[in-house]
Image 1 (cartoon, one colour):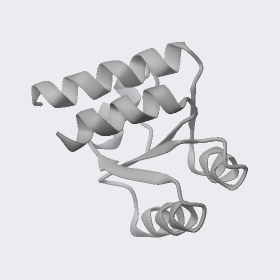
Image 2: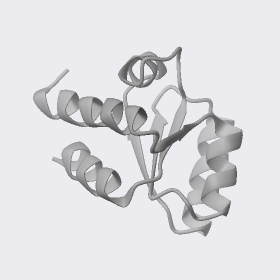
Image 3: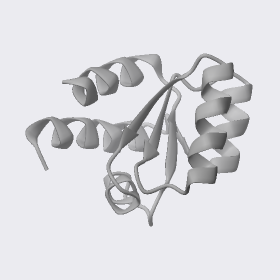
Image 4: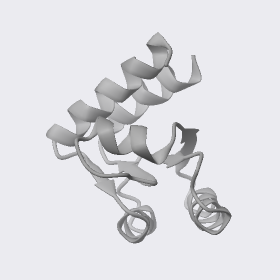
Length: 103
C-alpha cells in the first residue's frame, strides 16, 4: 500500500465517522439517483454485474467513480466488514479523496 493509498483510506475513515458515506449497492444506487453523492468508490474485485450497474448509473447521473482497492481494504477503512461500493456525500471529502486517488 502506497502513501497515497493510506491518505485516501484514512480520509475515508474520517468521512465514515462524520457520517458522510453510504455503503452497499442498493443504497449507493438510490443516493446516486437522488444526486446526493459526489463520489462513488468501487472495489476492483466487485462482480462484473455490479461494476456495470454502478458505472452505468453514475455515468447517467454524472457522478464521479473511482475503482479502488479490494473489498477488504474498503471495509477495514470504515471499520466494517467487506464493502464493495461506497458513496461519499460531502463534496469536500469527495474532492480531496479524488485528488489523493488520482495522484
